[in-house]
Image (cartoon, rainbow, N blue to C red; front, side, top):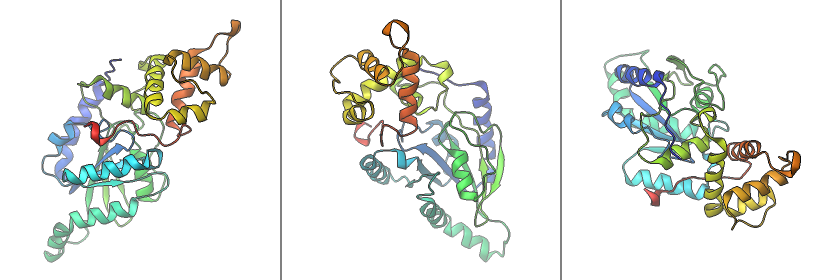
Length: 283
């Protein structure tokens, strides 16, 4: 399944981020804890250059806890500052603020020694679509002033937000990159909803997801859908799930589109349990 999605506005956003980089002290790179590496835009490395950066693994409460710990250790071994966060519950927010202060301590001290006041920390937040940027900003700022949604493309333009403590945060729309070199990256991003369902064959996507689940989290499938035989082909497993969940049409057949949407919605809403789609040892 080869998925590619790079709307024209994303190229414009990429250029704008490069131009705005000089305005900020630090970059918050947001990724999805369920797909920490696949959820990172490889172009950010080139765009960010030597600007201080923190990698924020959002939605950590939806990911496999063992995998979360492995990823933090992995990034630590690579010299990357990373923190686990849940933008909904607020988990990890204090650690993010503390890490920001540590990284920028010398710069903040230098400004104070020069008598520069009223010029607080300025940060930029970047990430792919549907990774939770708006939800994180709302949590950091203590208000619901930024639009949020469970679909890609909610944030449309550049905006500055004042956070608790006076930090100014520059929000940017989510951007992907022009071509996924690995087809499985596109699949994993589609699983999480980072790529619009409207451009995807949702039935085919769900079949790939079922195959992943039966090989990595079989008990989650069995428990959620009350099925026992996972040795079947994914399409037959989808049939069983559809039948169990009432996706039946005339003649006793299954509405596969409806069943596929149900399965993907269950994953994205964490009804299938805490699941991580990739692990450090695969890198």
